[in-house]
Amino acid sequence: MELSHQELFDFLEAKYEQYNHPEFIETDPISIPHRFTRKEDIEIAAFLTATISWGNRLSILKDADRLLGMMGFSPYEFILHSGRYETEQFESFYHRTFNGTDCIFFLESLKNIYQHHDGLESLFLPDDTTGIKGALCRFRSTFLEIDHTHRSEKHVADPFRGASAKRLLMFLRWMVRNDHRGVDFGLWNKISPSILMCPLDIHSGNVARKLGLLKRKQNDWKAVEELTENLRQFDPKDPVKYDFALFGLGVFEKF
Image (cartoon, rainbow, N blue to C red; front, side):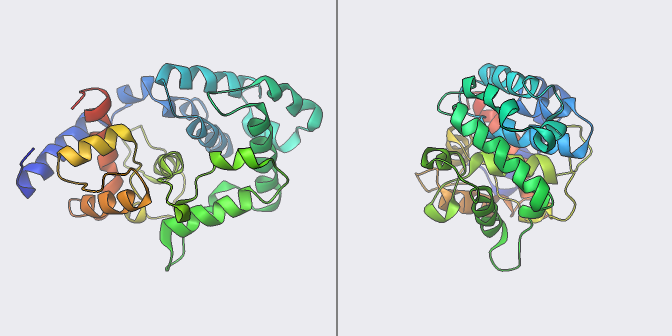
């Protein structure tokens, strides 16, 4: 698709406007944390929902609802006060390759984070040298500091090993962006939207390549960097807002 810079800007802006509205979230995983009002409940519900956000969207919504329901729809209170007896019920939970063992570890790690590391937000704060990539890796290191089986590590992306970290970047978009449109939450104001990286999956990657925004063939971290840098040409203060355009074009319009 051959478009001039101005034409591509206008196209992306139009699609961003089209998909960045509350009606969009009805069938999107972000609808799950939108059920909550307490900051910590939103964070935990968003993180767990993002963690299992791959595959069929209806299945994601169903399984995320079941997971939060097992916590009595009070995830923060459950995380803080649950013991081994309460978490044993999650042995039966699974979503695709995310099984009960993984789920129990994630709950126990979240408990460690809120009790000993001042919550999720503090672990994602970037520094001036490594940016979001470094923040993701520091988060991963802390998340994995408690005892766990090796299999659970595959559910926490490592961009230093080339992972696109799509689900973590999507979670960060939800938490950081604040354009008052009723979709992203904007709860974390210590992270600037300007340094966020665009979530990349097969849909957004294919659209980005058709639009000339991405040349790299693999959907890996280098592709994330290339795509985000190109999107910054259109909005350096909020490049990942175009995630709405790329995702909407790929999923809803089969672009």
